[in-house]
Length: 188
Ligand SMILES: [Fe+2]
Image (cartoon, rainbow, N blue to C red; front, side):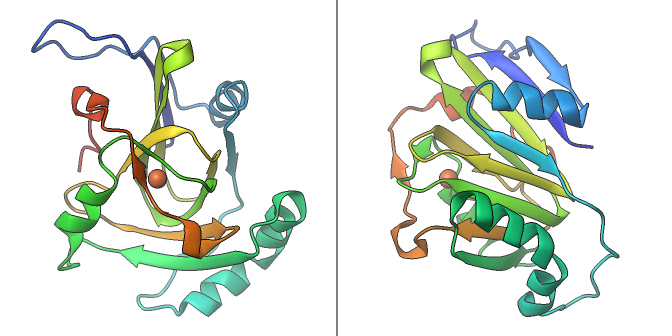
């Protein structure tokens, strides 16, 4: 189930677990809390489960109406579909790549066709860390420049649509802040 957890970003006693100030699985509350912080979140209509090895073009065609709506609102001329599973030989490196706090010059916009992933956003001016557990049918948009990290878990399993304005320019700029180490990872 999709879940939003909001924490203080302030350091706590060594060994203590951070306790969320707010935690909800209500999609409307998730969307409104995120909207108040400049992020967008939607639940899209369910499609039949994908057969193994469904080509990306077929996945994209299945979501054509929603993709067109997103593109009408905000650009994102390039959309692709990626799948990462627990048998991926690069899963450790792929997971590690985005586990530290970073920003992009582009919005990070994802739709979870299947599986799950944990988006974590750091808002230092509000002294907050938001963790959004995205599940199947969740669409999320993290604005360019937002401090964030992403955990796909030790046994990743997801298929996601990725929306880009400029896929060539989509690089991670690491902040050097080790804050991600103080917060829960995706538990799988
Ligand atoms: Fe990112």
